Image (cartoon, rainbow, N blue to C red; front, side, top):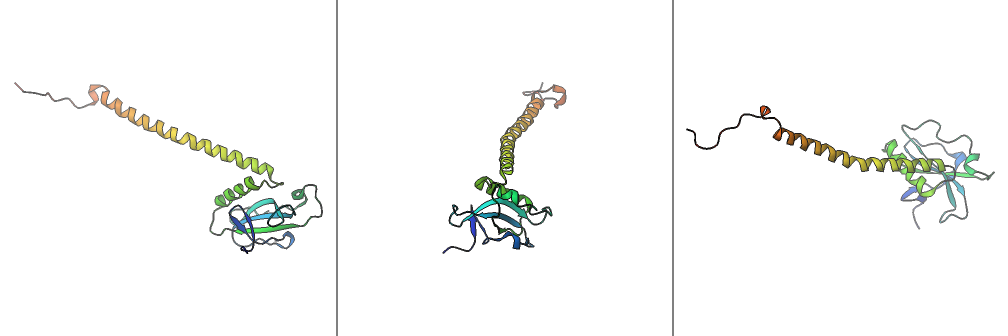
Length: 166
């Protein structure tokens, strides 16, 4: 038997509890709002929302109206599960949340998934540009050195005569 909780990717969240009973803990981490779905295995909970909590997160942690999370379903009970991530930054939590968003495509966060994918594409484009910019800077430094060698004779010290002196 495995450890208690629910696994999303390589993250072990706590055992799901009713959303109405949940209060945010005093440490930082991620949370998943889950809906009961018999088609999901090994535990019958489908993620409908991934979020973060902790330092540097806004006060309105959970949406006030949960109906939009369920879409057309009404009367369904929502659960919440927490991944404790103490001593992490908001950026680290946001990156992990974006990974979970792209892996599970929660029905209520499709816009955020698209935004995360476009943000990743922008970062990859920046990485592709960096080596070219660094290479261009190195070439400019080399060209400046070559210009000093073959520049006007006035900038260099006078040359000594080679050979026998009369």
